[in-house]
Length: 127
Image 1 (cartoon, rainbow, N blue to C red):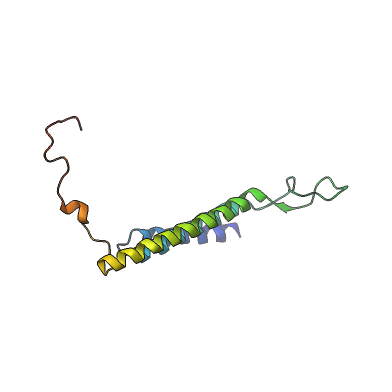
Image 2 (image 1 turned 30 degrees about the vertical axis):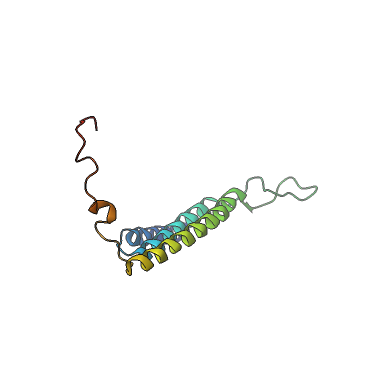
């Protein structure tokens, strides 16, 4: 079963990376979300069922039989919240990009490149 989870994680991360390398803003946004999901799944796999000390022990018992490690679960919950905030922020930027340019395709040269080289007039060679 671990191999299935590893394959699914690798497939999600590969699809996310492919989408991030796209020139479409929406695909980049979805690719980042897929990559974050793949990382969350990978962290979840590290917190598999173990026989270590559990976070909660019943009164009179010294240890439970099998319990999950709470640290990866807490990390995933935090990552989900941060990922959601990042997705909302990038969606707002994509909406702003669409309203300004009427397209969601990233241009090869943006407005900053049209201004010219910032170092063209400098005479110092200490770059």
